[in-house]
Amino acid sequence: MKFPFQISTAEQLEMDYKKSISNPEVFWAEIASHFLWKSKWEKTLSWNFEQPLVQWFKGGILNITENALDRHAAITPNKTALICEPNNPSETAISFTYEELLNKVNQFAHVLKNNGAKKGDRICIYMPMVPELAIAVLACARIGAIHSVVFGGFSAQSISDRINDAQCNLVLTADGAYRGNKSIPLKSVVDEALLSCPSVKTCIVLTRSNTPVSMLKGRDMWWEDELDKVNQMENSWFDAEPMDAEDMLFILYTSGSTGKPKGVVHTIGGYMVWTTYTFLNVFQYQPNEVFFCTADVGWITGHSYLIYGPLCAGATTVLFEGVPNYPDAGRLWDICDKHQVNILYTAPTAIRSLMQAGDQWLDGKNLSSLKKLGSVGEPINEEAWQWYFKNIGRQICPIVDTWWQTETGGIMISAIAGITEAIPAWATLPMPGVQPILVDENGNELEGAASGNLCIKAPWPGMIRTTYGDHDRCRAAYFSTYPGLYFTGDGAMRDEKGNYRITGRVDDVLNVSGHRIGTAEVENAINMHTGVIESAVVGYPHDIKGQGIYAFVIVSDKHHTLDLIQNDISQTVAQIIGPIAKPDKIQIVSGLPKTRSGKIMRRILRKIAEGDISNLGDTTTLLDPTVVDEIVLGRKK
Ligand code: WT7
Image 1 (cartoon, rainbow, N blue to C red):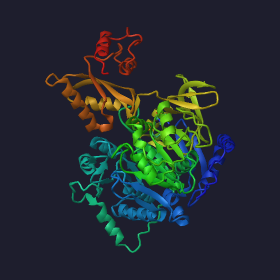
Image 2: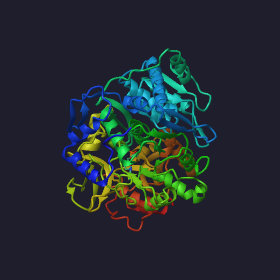
Image 3: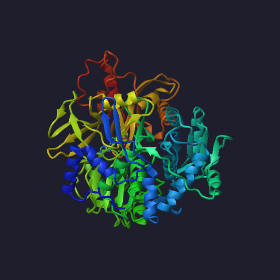
Image 4: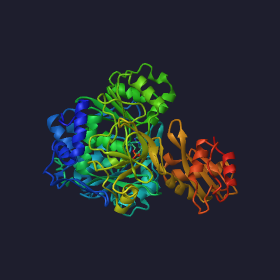
């Protein structure tokens, strides 16, 4: 399918950018008109960042799955929509054409309906990266239910917090997940979570790893049994639920600077237009190209560029169940060769770990199908960029370094593959519709080449609408630091040509292997350990992960060795949040540097964690300056 809004020259980009800023409503109405609507919207845009209120295409009636599936199944029924590469390379890959995927989604929509799910319900999805995950997500959208996907690495506690926050009534999971040489017992984690989730009435369980699981009568159903019932129907067509453009499509929880993750809400129409538009333009997707995004569907990248963007664009998208280093560090390259991947979209942390594994893993790999490369999730350092460009891109593939966030729904600042210039370690230029601004601490706008806090001036179709169940929190987190602006939480530099380089978070949020983790969240988890009195968590530069987690902890436990206490603290964090939040370093200290008013001086702890101890700044205002010397001495290298 050819979309007329695909940019093909730098001049066109410049023109479109200008149009999108001078008259956003006309610009986006034209683009939205190329999608399938059951009836047209009443108003293209209403907005006010004070409340905040953002509505795009309000009153327009549609179902995103008709855009992602039906329209392509009608025109190109035999085109491959989804290629699913299993964890174990000896298992056969499974592909679905647009027609087949539509049928699967229709069938599973019946399963959901048969189990009482309806428009507006919240459905929690905690699954491995198997075809049924994509099918489940789309089936929720087809019946008008709101999906809340929880990454398979989160703990029972994290799942139940998310289920309770959204009051989900249905959970979709699997017996277990394969990830590399590990098997993760998903259903038993869900069982533990559901002990404290009274809203959940039904749990549908897919068989994947054949791990024994407990199945609770009246609550737990086998996926396969439920599908059998649908297969007995004469016709399993499912009419897509008519939805308003501003109805919720999904909730995705993400960490902020407070302890509790926020349920970021995206609505249907704007998100569809934004993800499709950015997918087609940033990657310059051409019909018949194969697109491979290595992100997990549990994160926004998986939602936007593994499922919705590519499918709405009629692309072929690859879903990989496993991890880049299993069975060896050549796996991604094998997949690129096997499925003749043309566009690879991955994270700097993966690039760095494969780079470190050594170039021998590239020997004999045929990467000639690759035409374009992408990077996402954290700043990409120059060395990793060059390695990616030379070894994977054979110095001919353009690289797009795409900056965006869970809250932005899709790519905001990026080069356009092959059309605008890529600059290593720079995200470069804003997409049409995006008006970035840099401000100083006091919210004053900085002009020209500058360094400051990155904000966005005006709404774009894919932006966050609210945080689920707590609209005030959305205002407080994003719209109140600098009134009238959306604050990203990132710092950035801008050159005289208007290129942006993202320098990292300016709030208490860490980016560990491309995953967002709040320091307060980790501190809360550490403090749950019975032997812990107080803790302070900061980030430090980590060769592979980008940032590592460094915890300073005061303990009361006198009966165990320090080693054991540290391991217990790690275990506690894994139990409360998930293994991704385990501290890399734990230093037991007798006190923390605090001001006289009791505030922890994180600036000092950050410097110590970074190993930058030559100049710790002024410590005389501290309640007890000697504690700093002790911490410096006991620093974990
Ligand atoms: C944070 C958002 C965007 C999807 C994956 C992460 C950082 C993201 C880049 C980039 C520098 C980046 C920012 C941002 N980030 N992409 N290309 N260059 N930093 O989504 O979990 O919502 O995290 O990731 O700090 O705020 P997320």
